[in-house]
Length: 372
Image 1 (cartoon, rainbow, N blue to C red):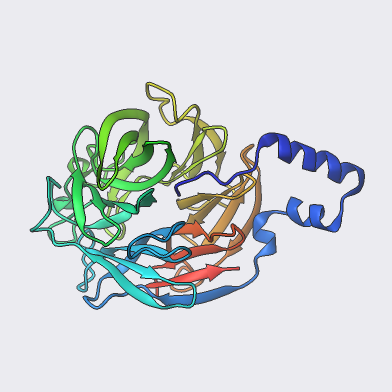
Image 2 (image 1 turned 120 degrees about the horizontal axis):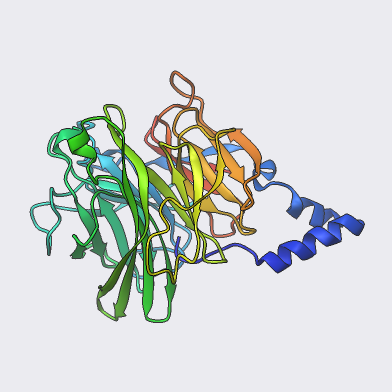
C-alpha cells in the first residue's frame, strides 16, 4: 500500500473509553474486529490474461487515476506462465470492481532497460507510487525450479505499462513482497528478500532473509531514482520448497507509528520492526507480535484503518486479524478448496478504497475475490 490507513492511537484510546461509558451503536460496530463485519466472499474476475499466465500473487488497489491506471481498480501480478512454471510469469492485470479485466503490462525479459539477474517472474511485491509509477518485484527461474532461481530485481513501469527502469543489487535478492509510503518528493519501499543463501541450502532452512528500505526520489516524467538502501531487518528464516518454490518473510505493512510488521512465514509469526522510516541499521527479526494460534504459515499482510493486522494463511485458507498488541481477535476461512482445505490458495491481499472490504487472490482458481 502507498499510504498508511490506521487511526491514531489517541483516537483508538478515546473510542475505547467512550465504549466503557455508553457506546453508541456506531461506536460498538467500529469496536468489533474488522473481520466480524465481513460475511461474504464474492468472485470478482479471473486473473488469467490472454497469454495464459497463472498463479496470481501481488494485489494492489489503485488510489489515483493516471494514464491507464484507474482509481478503485485492482492490479494483480502473475508468478507462473501458462505452463504453470513458477518464477516465469510476466503479466500485470487490472481488474475493475465490476469484474472487467484488462492486461496492464506484459513484460519481455529480453527487452528490459537495465539489469534484472535471471529475467522476469513477478512476485507479491507490488505497489503504485505518485505519478503512476508501478513497482513490481521479480524473482525469476529458468524452468520453474528453485535450483534455477536468481536474484531478480524491482521493475519500474510507467502509467501506461512500459518498463522504464530496473532496480537491482545492493541487497535486492529475491524480492518477495513490498509496501511503500510516499512523502513529498521521496518514496520509501520496504522490500522482503528470500534468496540469501536459500538456493545453495537445497531445502535446508537458513536464517538470512532480509527487509530493505529503499529510498526513491521523484523525478517527474523520468522514473524515480534510488538514492539510498538500508537493511532494517535481517535473520528471517527462509528455505526452498518443491510446492511453493521458496518460503520466507512475506507480507509487510506499515503502522501509523512507523512500525513495520512482517509476516514471518517459516516462523509462523508476525514480528514488528520499530522506527522503520528512520532507523539506520537492522533490527534483526524485530519484536514478536504474535505467533502460533490461528496463524498457519502467514503470507500476505494488510493494515486496517484502526491498525489491526490482517494476514492470510498458506496452509488452511484462513484470514486472521491481530491487534498491534498481539491479540488474535478474529479468524475466518475464505477459501476451502483442495486438500487440506484452503492450502496453497491464498497469497496477496489489499483493502478496497473504503477500507471496509478485502480483495485477495485465489491461487486455486486463478481469480480475484472480495471478502465483504
